[in-house]
Length: 275
Length: 294
Image (cartoon, rainbow over all chains, first blue to last red; front, side):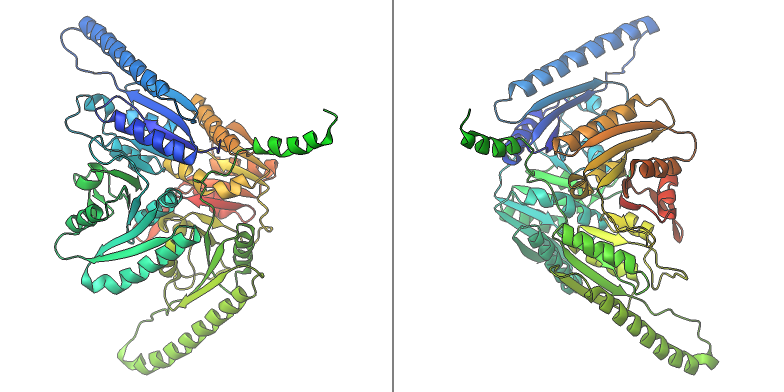
């Protein structure tokens, strides 16, 4: 036992199995305890008179409870490793994400599923991934249902000199220690290349201080920084991408570490985000 | 059982029950401090922390040239004034460097200086640090020579230890976590983990104006997270009506804490930052150290 805890958002959804798997792999690797969390908002579709609506709400609540019961069973049954497991769940009309965040207060990391538009449970889950990232104050790992399983080969720190990236780097440092190869990657315009090179080398120096040997890689921004970043991630066969998340809530476009949210919120491999 | 060798082997086994340090524990690898000749307290605090946590210490000297209004007739005077000011800044930076170099043996120290706004240089160098130590130098203060600890806490993307110049040297034996169910406090908790894990007793404190079943659950979970790491932690939910910041300070004093771990709350308004009530209260006092995260 080391005192470390990893919280898993196991609210029923398409990708929940990937979250459970990534959580177990990580917990075993770092000898952490696992905290399984699930929160659902009962369906509020109301039809007919009040009496019928009340009954409908009760039915929906029961359905949600059964759903959560199954989630708990699946989580506890997977307990073949060393990790100690604890389960908490909630059915409430309040924001499910806020509940998850509050319950994960003592966790070193939250693992969650990226949002999927195909997910039939998405209404009950609420907009989840981005809320967890922006509101939790903890690093959040998104483990995609389809894509690379979490391995410990190569990790990429996508660098951009913002408060959020600095924050992400700080939060991610302990996790970067687990990887065979760590690359600090910046995609920068030619005019800024000298400044960025300086930034990268000081980041590398800081990581070395944490016992993490790091390579640095700087790509010139030709057309679109996102396209180039994704190409690099592909080329390096990264198992994990670390990035800062910044943005203003209620704006239609989220910008995450200078990279459009499209990739980071719908990744093809595990990503670690901090705000 | 009469064999004494059994007892000898028993002792380490008992010790092994204590939680091992998790690989996820961050530690302070690098600490950063803005050095000013008239604020020696913060430098001493940073140096002591670097020694204690085996960290590298980055000292920064920064002071910018203050522009003055120039009319056609005063051009010459301006040139002369600039030369004099540059010289004064250079002298002040040299003094800062000297003060920094008087640090303790055995700590790896790095010095960086530039004629620019301290807040700008600190924010830039912060990426190479895990913790920033800050305080307020005696007045008069200006943006050109001083970096405000509160603003640093909100903008640097790093935890900031506010080390008041008037405070006694930091021991961090007894520490208070000022808990509140929000992002900043959650972040502060983990940013402070190296300090919390080396404390002998920690009080997890929530001051609350309502009944607070949620607050109780909060401090319980935080206390449990600390206990799992082998920290002696107690919880307290204190009812308060009115000034939460003052109540936190009062209870911290009663507990005998010399450092409070807290979230930093604030938002930018035009030219300046507006701080939350608790943050303002914790920044306004000169007795207790405060570790802020945002």
